[in-house]
Image 1 (cartoon, rainbow, N blue to C red):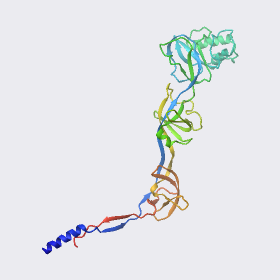
Image 2: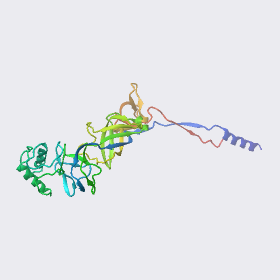
Image 3: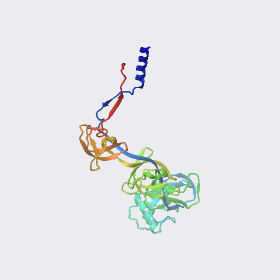
Image 4: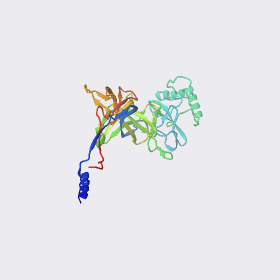
Length: 349
């Protein structure tokens, strides 16, 4: 009986006695400096919208039999814009719009513009003088023959569309399409050299408003266009619209612009650089401490404290100057980690 009680007392004591512990003191956790890149970016949406001005009208009634160029394509001196009843409508450079048929005996700035086109195409071997003489008649015939038009020596109203500032991106009115009849007066517009680009920031993104000059990368079907932020405004729905320009402050797309024309505003993916990407000696933020002057410091494995300069961070890591790749530092500065482990009770009292 006594032995049983003693055995029970020992078992109870083994259960009720607080566990014994031992301090297992470890050396400081260390980290080997590696080369890496950090930076912060935000996904957003950008609007691309083409705009332009009316520069000419079509003066040839009839049915559209072909569109020689895609809407928004770059058109130059002497290019065919479309055909009406199989007859070509040709684009020529000039500030004075076409308003009459041109033939022998005519003179004026419109004749000079015609002569300049003929000279540029190699059909007129004299300087334009604004007078439609025999040499101009011969040049018109040569041009008509080369472009498979009826050879008359006269340029009928509707054969030419004078457009200022060629080469230029042109687009004709929506109703100008193959198979449709034209009555005359349909508008030709010259587009701006590049679309207007604007970053669209929803209300929840306004706290991450990038400062002027921030890099924004647009995703254009596999290619990337790097732009910079400029001025901003807020629309009626509270959306912040930030203008995007080229690095030199010019239009968003250098000429010739590779962004395809679209009649309506396009939306593309944009990546906004909130903190520039930098590459160098990469350390965890947990390894950084503060020195006496408030500067950032790290502690080497031998206890030496070294000042470093933070070049960039992504919120958990930092790229710093003052350390070399391969050096070892303490992960938690000067702290010593103590691990407390339970001790298994012995088999005796």
